[in-house]
Image (cartoon, rainbow, N blue to C red; front, side, top):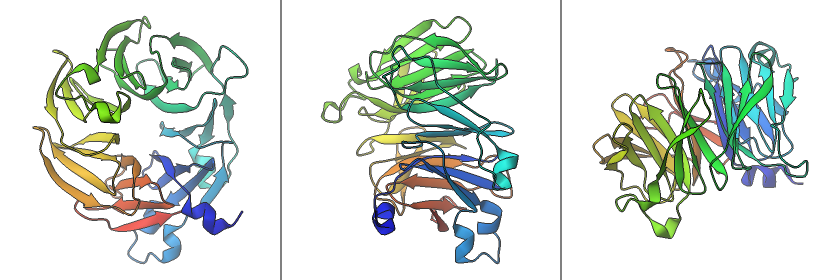
Length: 324
């Protein structure tokens, strides 16, 4: 296959910063993970080469749907499997997984994609959501899947954790956001976002593609409009007038950053207004990450339907792009 064709059809689905904040890992639709040195790319004497990966390796057979780091490891998820890599080894350009595990699926024929992962610090577990409609909990200390949360009727796109409340939240294709007690594994609430008139957009469907929480607040969207919810009253307080489906959103300082269909990062105010839309290279966006691990390399990185990952040192404009 012509490499130019591969680049033209590349999509970046996932990214994660190293624990030290000096590196960025990005995963694409070909199962590859690229490691970029942010310290090299951000240095005053950076060259074009500084914006290329220091390491690229194949991690999974299908797309790398999700990447996540803890204080020493990088977790990557593809079709039906999760691999764990040592950051200190990756930085030395040694790409050998520490382990690869598969959740306990009902049939051996089914290979559901794993769309979302988050760490629950309360019990040092990895919360995994994906194509079999279930949430699987992996005990990271003992390396075993210890429980399954069942309740969604279609596949899961996103997961979030409220550590203080011992709650896990999940959103899926069925249009529901479910809240689970992480101690008992029971579903304690189920909110069907598309049934709220202020959020509903039947022309886009009911699926929930992004979900994140910040203490008592939840942000979610997809088919329904991106909306901010107060979790104690379980009611939407702001609905953001963004076109298309939003694929990832994040709380940042006193703002909300969101990406999805369209070549821009939207800056929204908590009250519901869209303050700015900052142009990006990809025509459609899948992932945004804020590097909170290093003050020196505090950047926002955005990826989507392109081999380019845009880097913002200032939220108002793109500084440069990294590329696979």
